[in-house]
Image (cartoon, rainbow, N blue to C red; front, side, top):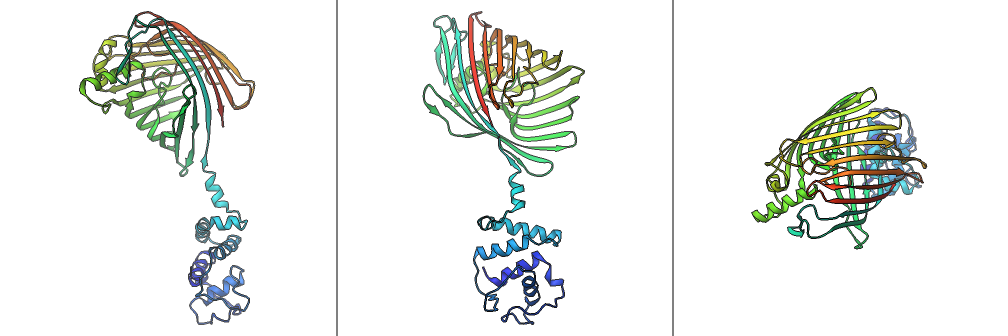
Length: 445
């Protein structure tokens, strides 16, 4: 880098020297008073930004190192009486020479502020699950292969794995943020793991009482009875806590659905000779939620369209449309005790088209906090989960079952969450017995 260029840059960004009249004596013998940079060099020397060499020369045409430039930027950063425009230019140079300034022990406050705009969270989760059916409730297809026949074999399904998750949030400006979720999964029984993969990413903008989201994001409506997953598209949310309207539009991956959806996908691909290119549904939804005294309520309508549904006729689907209406209410008797009811019905299916649940819980809903040690809660629930209603319900029980569930929440250490659940009941198809044991430990950061 030429020192003459450095002089011009530093002059422009530090003191606006071109418009200043100077009376300082000439500090450098090789910068005559008629030189184009004389005023700037004289002023910068007077202010201590540049020093020249020990032999009273400036050597303006000589290359300098990045460290020499960083020293000048550091001195410019120390100046107080600079305009807003000059300050912005100083910050740009500080960003360019950040590494050198750091090695010189100079803190770049602006860069530190920008670094604070990216916040990281995450967790490590261990899950154990064991499901037992007396008899297989349906013909189960995995990757196009029938693995069990109803009435012929007992079905057991054990899971023993972990999830590692990162949830960075970056501030773009005062209105917009960028949010994402990065996951990796491991099977402890098989000693296998997946690479970290981008699961969700969306831009979120807030303007008054309106929030707009674009990308791959949580469904945000009916996240218990319908969707505990994400969709790709756009979301608009309007209103305050007392009453909020949410609109969704985009695409939903049916491969993330329950075993009946996967069965339909396998059957469609087998018949058409495809490899799963058409297993994504068009998706639209509208939802309303709010508070009325101690009652937290919500209702929503979801529409999904996919050829996959036509291949699920043996399990109650009627055509290629899912039209589901849901209603939910949580009444808080006290701060910690609440009763929740949940209902959903798919008007596009002939059978197994209704889901409902009733849950009474202590700190089961809004008031459980894993931040501090000693928190605990529990719930008792009865659920009837029709497989044609919710593609990915939150409940760990498989879709297509009905029965009781007892859950216990707690944390013996700060930022450590534990969940134990035992469930038993019947399958909706075949009325076969099933039992489930589930456990989770989650370390949050």
